[in-house]
Image (cartoon, rainbow, N blue to C red; front, side, top):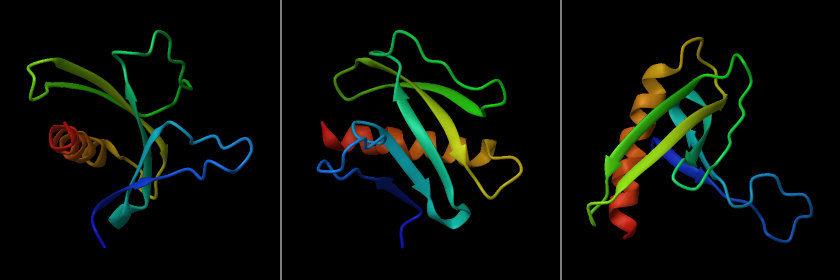
Length: 98
């Protein structure tokens, strides 16, 4: 199994709450995170205790990419290390799709 994988929605399901979201699982720790593109998000509300990580990088076209990772669930008490690993993995993913 890979360390990371995307969780995909089935488009035929009514009220599918993960459709059009970047939901990622870190398989070794069973940590599920939302990766939100902040370039296109005007307002984002998270719970007061939500663990998050803001990160940014420049894509291959030289454009600035700004994201926020929101922890959805984890088996860990402190998930910051996994959030950092996820930000690096996601950056590499974005650089390979364009």
